[in-house]
Image (tube, rainbow, N blue to C red):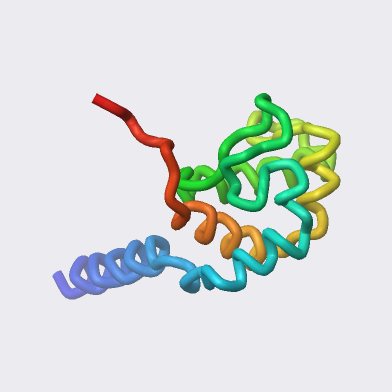
Length: 121
């Protein structure tokens, strides 16, 4: 009986740690990184006014989606051939400059921006 209790407690702790959130993103650092790495040159200073209609609006997008996309571009640039890799000549070059912290901060800042990205009824 004691073994199953210990195992259950150990399993519970493991699950809690696995689901623990990463360090909180720094919104100000995200804005600084967005400007430093010239993201605005394609996506616009407000992250809503892209230079080409085919470039996505980033302001107000879900933080987890943005982070996933940035990481997928980085995987694509490394030559990964998984379905979880994106290949785009511009983005794969740009994202190579970003650390994981930069990507988290940028994604958090972009998601905090006001935007028309919403379902309208």
